[in-house]
Length: 355
Image (cartoon, rainbow, N blue to C red; front, side, top):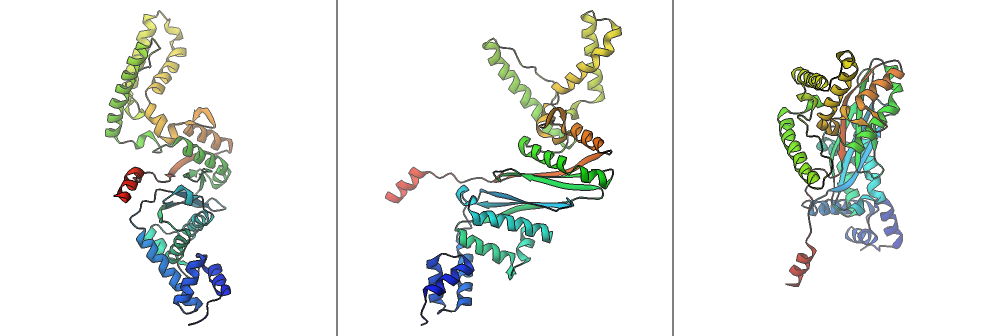
């Protein structure tokens, strides 16, 4: 049996970053053979990962990698079991390395990612070794890479807490316009991270969803108005509609006729109607598109200038650079969204242990 010295343990720890006691055990089991000890630790890490497989990993961080030319960008979500581990330097490095590798390889699935070459082995081997070092279940949940088409760019943003991130891709009339738009596109990504749109435009809404939302929102406002009335406070306007997708030419024509009827009833002379009707019609549209303003990126009030929608701000910025621009795609990730977290009943756990 080879003598296991402190220097050997130190060297193995430096090579693997595994705990000291694990390094000593590995060297003892492998009779001092350094390479076999590394393999022992790697296999042990894989076994530990398998034991953690049934745990829920709903915390974590997002990583982002954007090309210097804004031709492409990748966004990655890696989950951990606890927020504490998500603040670990090793975990932060793992997220950054994964984002960079996804960006470089252009893979589209986690399985493809795991099979790619990384350092001296596969990415899966590298990832498993990091899981063993950090000490709890960690998974690559999802990732996406957006590539700019002709006359386009991609930019993005991850919030300082690492839990919300957005990529935005635009297409312009020229590459010159696209390149000048890069800072603005990052601002749009920041806007989306804050305002959390679910779709690009009101045109993307499913009609059934709009119908159900309309009924629910109208009933909610009516209920709220009952309470406001009881408190003798001003009542909220109950809209007829909630999305521009519902405001057909017929609906808008009927709204305009209702405005004219009201102007007639108020005794307003017809010669001043052209000065009044556009504003009141715009108010009608504003009152009846609440869903769009909440959930459709292009229709939201732009956080950098709330006198404009995102679509209007985009057009204004592009015009300032002598061109036009269109947002063609955006992706928003929030850490843990859609994952059902475990709720631990501490009292029940203690009672079970005492039984």
